[in-house]
Image (cartoon, helix red, strand yellow):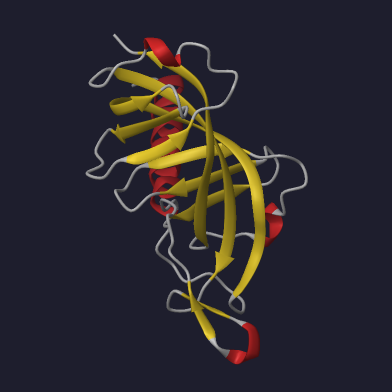
Length: 185
């Protein structure tokens, strides 16, 4: 074996060892941890858009501008108000598969055993829809994990207090309205 080949083989071995050592240091984010700090509301009214795809239309009522959808993997349905910018509502029929873009508002909490201290020292039970999986303040990304294990990442507005949020924070989601509907083939 020549000296150059021996150096290349040694260098490859060092690179492989380094890569294996670094991969052992990484752990996947976890949403089921207890976040630090006292139980409190971190921020409410965070406006985001969520794409529900594919969703199956259970019913639609053009007169009241409401639609009932069952999202993939969900056993329960969700009823949404349909915004005025959705012009094809009368064309959508029950049983169709659609992609619905929904305007939502997030509220982020640190809870202790599902409870938030209320007025006068009484605790208030909060119904949680998701948990924070990860926060990336540099790119303004907030990743949530739902109870079914699915993750969703949102690009959030500048005024969102991402530096106060951590993995495990509880999230309550309020759907505002469907802002776009598109048929899926």
